[in-house]
Length: 225
Length: 225
DNA sequence: AGAGTATCTCAACACGCAGTGAATTACCAG
DNA sequence: CTGGTAATTCACTGCGTGTTGAGATACTCT
Picture 1 (cartoon, chains in turn orange, red, purple, brown):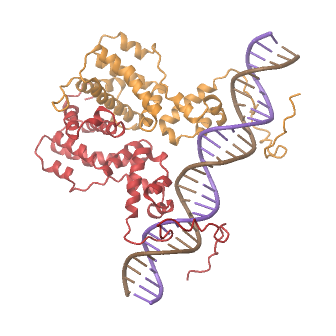
Picture 2: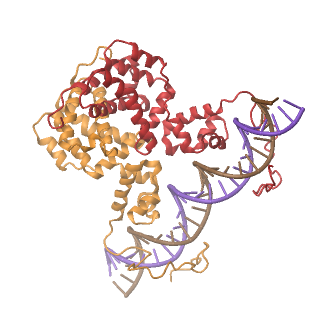
Picture 3: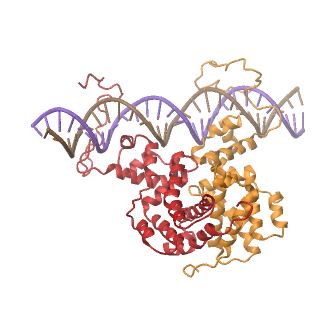
């Protein structure tokens, strides 16, 4: 016998709501669902979506759970806390064999143009775009996001580029360039009727490459050098 | 006639807490304060501070009221709602006789350098910097902020510049340039140990001017033109 | 001086939030 | 089949939030 549990110290006297007994084709309403389990991934996907569109503070766990078709308590079960979910959501889902990354390494075009191409292509993958957007939105408020941003910037932009083409004052120039690139991506993401959003990926690459190259190579004024 | 109001349907039976009668040198604790009234301005100042540092959603009216040394209800009295307070806070406090603006109009240097100088000087005025920061932070979430940003961008950047020096595809180029400028300002504001934040205003101007000029004047690639 | 109005505090409400513990169901290894 | 473990929902608790109404105090205009 499953032992003598107190039959229910909570309120709810003798099953008040059998819960609208005859729901349409709906079967089980309680306990584990049959079939394989993909729920954690589903939650993570919708979390990235919400965090990237509304920011951390405006996003409620209930909204994510609703979108994922799941009880809010499941989030606590899989990710411990809202913070835990957020930190999982801003883990940029990059794998070295993604086409954009492979092409960056194997192409023999100009490094800057290759970088711009890779960047724009990365933003075309929704999960990546959402993670990056969430990171940028919270970078000023959340240390984890700030670190994620620095890591992304160093690993996927700074290190590959500087190691290939020499650039003086790399920290300064990279900050300027990444700011420029981020501003473009954000405008494309949020202001859908902006000119920038109407351009094709190839057009955006062609548009941003010259300025990126200029930022990296133009002689710095005497005051700062 | 003031008519017969129900004398008090709320709880609070016969004044429960006379509130720690003898506070140090503190006099009046209730009712209007003696002397001239500057409270609305005080609230607005602290609101800008909080909104710019923590964003709209993370900022509570109670926090603002505490910082201003005032009861939260006063905010509702002066600004109606949190939203009302925010919309007042993102009204960029610019007057045409501010030194930075005057200098922009009267100097005879290169227009782009003048613009950069004005911009950096504007960000040195805390109230302006805070309003602009709050606008940028919420531009993706709040229509009022988005409009404020467009207005600022057009009135104080686009119109003066385009009217003076001809630039083709102004919308596209202005978006790129303003994104670049905003990214610099934000990095200086939030990442205090960044290289950018350690530069003097004059240095930042010297650093950003060439890129701004490049963005405005470099021939656009055939794909977009 | 006195009526009327603006400023200000207090107490409370209603609501949404993140988080918790127990109960229920399905999966899986022996 | 059977026992253990993971997945899932439910009911609930505090807590913090924006907002409200009433009452108290000061200022202002005649």
